[in-house]
Image (cartoon, rainbow over all chains, first blue to last red; front, side):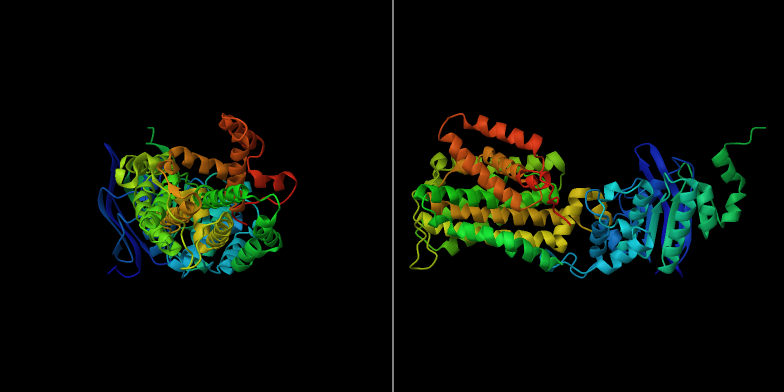
Length: 253
Length: 322
């Protein structure tokens, strides 16, 4: 079994694409209820890390355990059904159906009928949960709009709604505020934090923008060229010379 | 909500009018035996186009091999009848078994690939089936199975007149339409649309996409195969030409003409195609040029198909999901 309170354990995970080592021996543990952030400059291997955890990639070496269970190598749908939901850096929704229908189809994935013969003729009633989610993200008024007609910021929220609709216990957020203005970013991070806390979720967040994570994270790990160069509380990370160097380049003198 | 949608679509006022008109059609004075058989074809191919719409319109999968399901159903039925077993139910049951087995294999391999590869795999499998029946003398080779007797609904009731065949296919249409309508408004149908819209995202929501695709392929194939099984009762034959790839192409055209993802549209499209083909080919040999032109016109100016007229006239967009 897992150590106390550890929800997700990434254990010396390496992933290579041919000669390119995207991740090398990355380890960390995310505890119940934490907001754990992984930061790093572009190309540091953050998205690869997410793809390994969410099942898109199989790690070349290493283990990923969720609640003590090995999940490395499982298919994305199997990992989702265990309770890990992921949002995408590039908005990944169902463009030509309504906003409500987007969330509905995500929510019904956890209905009793899902995957059973009865799903051929029954339509599970998940309307209430879907409507509640849209309301929480201020999308209730837009529910009948086609998802592709939403603004960028609204689509980012819908993206999070889709993930939350599958009732995860661990939420993976891949740069949820990508493309937002600084003001929107602040609102969005506060909102996500609030909703995650209200639902008792553990959150693993990826960001390249350090300022986003500092205010909302309990713990931060820093990736640089596929290696973890630091991990600790946000204040520690902010003052870590290695981290500053990774972001700003080596001192000039 | 689900029930209400299904009820309105299947037995709502407009639908009831259509059903009544279809039921009374044989009473029309112009309906000779020839026209009854033409109406049979229109409804049969309309229903098959609707089955294909489950794949094309709802799931976003284009099958170039539906003629094989149709042809296999026809052969299965003809083989049973040829042996002197005249029960329609045995014909249908045997067609279900044969088509299911074949569809299981095709869908297993084809759904492992996406887009054009899915289409090509369905085409290749269908060509194999065509070639098998074309060159196997047991099943009559290129002549197929000719002169089979009419099936019987019950011991005393033979489906041996165009009128009876017409009502049989009308029942088939009604049941298939009900089944498809229930299917697309169900949990399953919503997932199909999600797969059409964004297959990768559907996986990350916990849906085993390939399993859903296989299931919808099987259902579509079965409905098509059942249509095929009714065909020898009308024509008294099953030939390899029923499985030619051009027939698969015609099915796709029927769906396109009618309007993707609407169910009712492809029924209209199938019927329209059959009637157009019949009318034009009775005047000229090069009827496919005319049909091609009509199709080009529809695709260019009515991209939502014949049912898109509603939209052009300011009506609600007729689409798979609300």
